[in-house]
Length: 123
Image 1 (tube, rainbow, N blue to C red):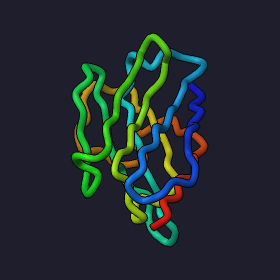
Image 2: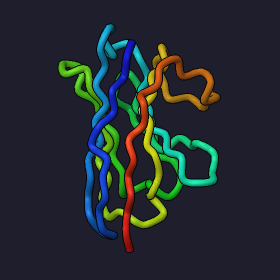
Image 3: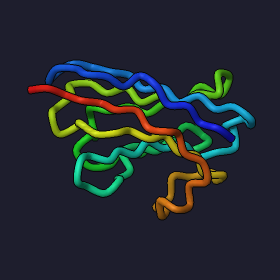
Image 4: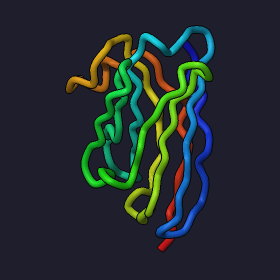
C-alpha cells in the first residue's frame, strides 16, 4: 500500500484546510486510518483516527475543530481542519493499520505511512 498525502499549505489563524490521503496498491476498506502530526522539535503525535466502521476518535486540542473522514470508494481519508491555530503548525502524516477499531496502539503498529504534508498557520 502506498499513501500519498496532499493539501497542506500556509493559512492564517481561524482559517480552514482539508488534507487528503489517497492509497494505491490496495483497498483501504480493511484498515484503520489515522492522521499524525509532528511540530518542530517535538515527537510525532496522533491527531485523529477512523475505524473501519467509520467511528472516529480525536485526540488532544483538535477535538471539536478537526474532523477525520473516509471515502472507501475513492480510497481516500481526509482531515478537515477548522478554526486553525498557530500551534497546529506541523508536518501532517497519514497512516494505515490493518485492524478494525481505533484502540490505543503504538505508532509502530501502523504499517503504512504517507510522506507528510506541511501545514503552517500564521497568527
